[in-house]
Length: 352
Image 1 (cartoon, helix red, strand yellow):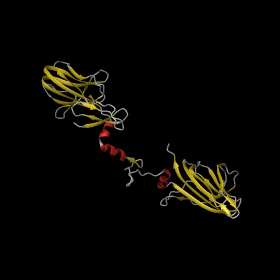
Image 2 (cartoon, helix red, strand yellow):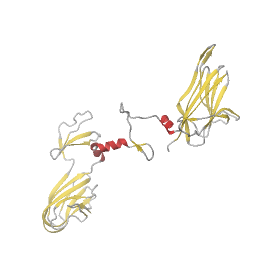
Image 3 (cartoon, one colour):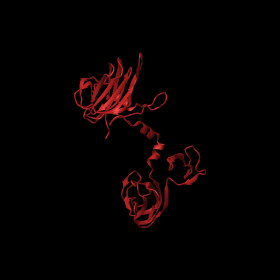
Image 4 (cartoon, helix red, strand yellow):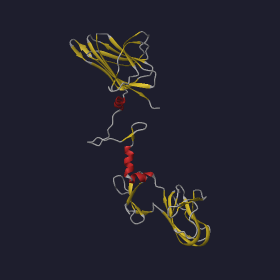
């Protein structure tokens, strides 16, 4: 009859040989090594019973099943007059069930009177652990019965055997709340094509940038004020500040200064018109405090005509607090210090 597969308790598919009417199972490990060297005949697929019904309320049934019945088919033959019904039980109380009669007619009342022989199938019996046929009315004769019951088949049996189901499961990747797209692979390596989240935000039009450069003399500072909006769409920011000699970079949070000159911020996707929710000013004045110092770095050197450049970078993103003013301050420790600032950020609302 062929070879089918099932999974053992560790989820490993195992071959099942169904060539002679019974089932012979050989369990193997993941490396193919047999765990049972001799095939063991077992009956995993079907429970069978046969007998006769020749009296009122005579029964024949599948009462000793150790599984939940999913399908029951029975054949009636012989010379008899009466009515046979199909009944199922969970707790010992039997209920009348519908069947499909020869020719496809669905009946709830069972096999009709007067020698109506044939093959029948019980309907909607999933979950019953006891099934039986009963002669609910009887006039004469004897009905010969052969009855087969099979267990419910779990879904994993299906997706192991049906290739189309496997294909469906890897094709259904959601690209929005209502749109699904096929999984795409690299043509040369068959590797999955992915991008990191920051790169995704560029494509989504929610990634922004700002750059500036200033030449500073010794002990002169340049302040940049960053003001976040009072929304839960927070800025995830990285920055790079550099100087051609001794340079100190500091970040202050929650000050009360006022920005001087508003700056132009750019969307990293130049095809997008989406504007950033935060503002950046070059310079600041007024107020009473810069806020709390939360980050700083000093680097670079200057000795006569020889200079060593300075660089301060925050590669790990800093999630800025909403409705808050930040000051990023660049202070030179040398005359004629060429300083540069690069800010990049995306704006994102956390998933609840």
